[in-house]
Length: 295
View 1 (cartoon, rainbow, N blue to C red):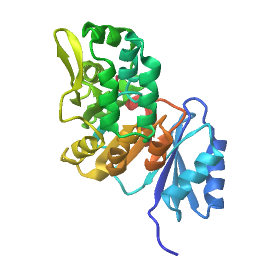
View 2 (cartoon, rainbow, N blue to C red):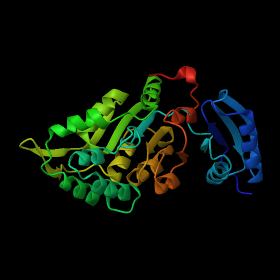
View 3 (cartoon, rainbow, N blue to C red):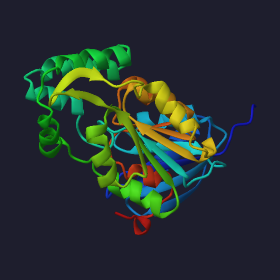
View 4 (cartoon, one colour):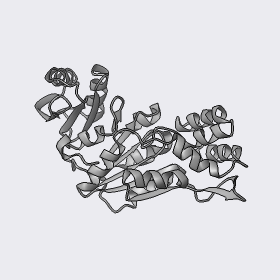
């Protein structure tokens, strides 16, 4: 039999996890021809690690997600650095709860039209750059002051965002927020959450109104991956998180790539998909106990 890397399987369901869930996970692994080993609580009732051998990570993930639909499952190699030295994250629908361009379009009475294009682009059905240009063009003439109003009225942090980034930073990790959205949103969001670095697109303004264009070069999928690869941190010690198709190259390149409440293509491309919990699941994936959390 071809040897496979030993795994750590982390089950997360804050306040709702039982030892019975760990037993079920062990049975599922065994039924899939793997060998379950020691189970160790990260925090009782919240998150538990199960050590597993003799099964490949994709097979373990598929079997466990099917059997435990109400629990987030993170499967990763046991020999990789557990606590990551870098987090690189998407913004819209990942670190914040909305898509900023859709909310801006609402002030122009065009939300439904723009949101449909955004959704298709995030599913990977449209070219990202062309879809971005088409949506921004629809906003031409919008009063630039609406940006600040939109940010104040619509933008809310994703639950767990500050805790995730600030905890990792407190333990020495570098953090990068990288967005196919806009600097007018990304910079204040990055500051509020605690990111050390931020990259996003710039909406062009002329005479106090949106010009309908975005400055070049744009932050697209390739730019996200390049920023990860250029961070100077060994890839096994990196974590990437996003929700859309333009996050896939970044997620696929990271040591631990996580799709967060993501579109199907992104979820399939990631090492793990957070389907239930908030962003603190990413801390559980790294073995952080609640007592270690910051923010």
